[in-house]
Length: 296
Image (cartoon, rainbow, N blue to C red; front, side):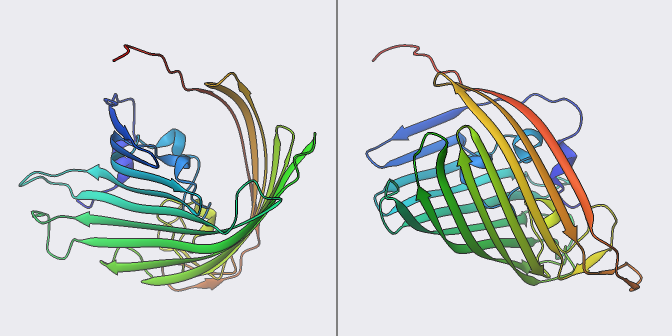
């Protein structure tokens, strides 16, 4: 059978957690359980924040680097390992998330260029499941953003960003489209402990690997349904407060307005359904304790 990530996400299961990290002057090397999920800073069409709760921790190798002109996060997440004659596919994801800083982040107007790339490979050199079962899928985005650092008592900062995204099915026939594009515009304002965010997305034949389902042209609810040039409006409000260095309490509410455009069913029938509205609300308490075991 083809590899499907959700086959490991059912019921209760325990996983070991181990991380080895080497910290140098401006580079960190991480082996084992890497700093994954939202730590990568990927845009919504490329990564769904809900995976922070529903996906297993990312495991592999990671390089984190920082300099006055760039922040870099490169990683490999090994999601499924195979031995000879195994009956499932191997799968791993390679990612790159960088931010080129055109001036100092503390500047009144900080300008930057984000570049994000994801590539997932499924198959393997010793894959004996079937012929032509190898699949390679890619998502990427590049854009430009500006942050206005106001640093007043209530109004902290304002950010606007515009990204062009792409999808490419380099090998395999997993998805109905082999390439697609999209444009994502977003803005947020920080008001004390609140962040209010708005976003707009429009795409053509774009399929997201790990992004929010409303940012793709393939239905995740009904098999065989695709959308022609869909659009999505996003509104998000989040409250977050730190307690000391290692604890945070937060509340987040999201609203999505999805405009499917022309919908094509599995039998080729074309319809024009109306827009749909979806909501999500969540409360979280983050704990990241750290304590010294021994001085060397």
